[in-house]
Length: 166
Image (cartoon, rainbow, N blue to C red; front, top):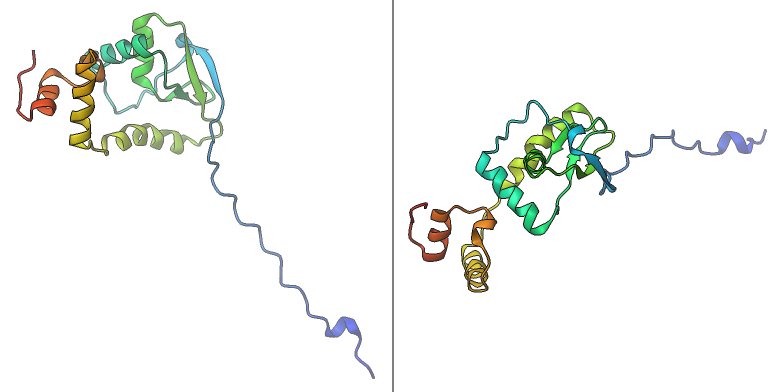
């Protein structure tokens, strides 16, 4: 008795779930403005900002405008940009540019609060290039105090010798 075609055909392998899509390259891709009064600092933000640093950031916003939005969740809780928020309050700015991190879990938001601060700290300067840039900026009449370095740090970078703040 001849075999039927159905009995000799190979069965397809069982279907597998498709692989998970890669993380979005731009999970936050729209900018909006929100009232500063509606933005809520994350209560457990471990990064502290001195009054001097808030003053520096306020001067930066005054000089160059708002160049980096505040990152918030859907409810307006700040994930990144606590110091910019404080500087905006100091300057009396009513609305701030924000980007909303939609759909992030609580753990993702909490981890990013730390990562946003620590990742920048982990970098270093190319001393020769920094000295050259600062020297050129000073020669062009730029106010080097706007850059966030204290007087002693600037002196050390520019001369190689420790200096006194003052």
